[in-house]
Length: 335
Image (cartoon, rainbow, N blue to C red; front, side):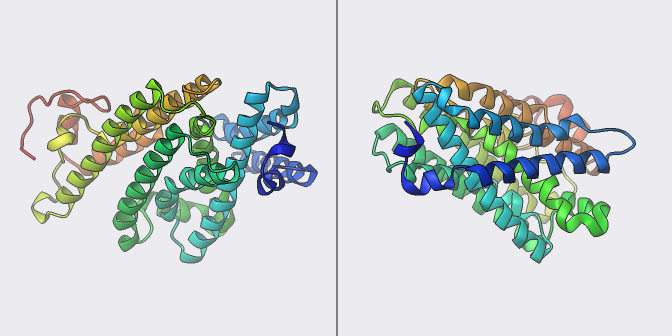
């Protein structure tokens, strides 16, 4: 699909000369800031990868007319989704700065890819393909359930401890540096994870076997995440459990059933994408989600905090797998 064939709003949203300069300028400025703030240690590669990804994507997008027509359509759709996410997260950053509470980033996290996916679907003609509609239904249920849970968890208690520590360390520059450290960093990551969604929106073949496999994976993920969150909420709100380790229900099967559930949901989006010609390109992004949830900062930060604050957590770690569930061994309580 040529850009001229895209709906008017979508073609206007895709970067022109001004857009190229803006994206490139922000990305280069981001790299310079990372370098200056990390001296004398040098540029931190694990953080520099995010602005570099934006620059690489900009170069790819500028050459999209040389790509296969189907892949070009995916590149344009993914770019549109990225621009939607950027605009949304910029607004959320402004709100979080006014409220002095950047925990709202966690609440908006699932709504960001959902909003980008829905707008991309609408602006591309609102396909009525059954598989696309099933994908949208799954994404909607996941995004709003998770956002609602996180809002109930974080909003009544002020800014979450992690963001509060960053605010304290950031000092007078935190009001603007938070845009890069929190919103742009997580925005690039979420956008990369959303590649399968951009791919899956191109389905036009009706419901395939991949769709039913995706639905099964999504159901497993949704149960683990939503039931795990519910069980943890009940545990935390019971005063008798203060200082104790949650090792019951799904939390006896693995230490992070919510992270496992989240990864399975993104796997489902990758399986939806496999029904499209270029769907295999979403698989590396699914693998990234699994790595992040199992080995990356999502799990490691939580584990370090729990070891410091929960005396029985080391024992819990010894008898319970971190991520992939298995039947409980040596469980101390019943759900």
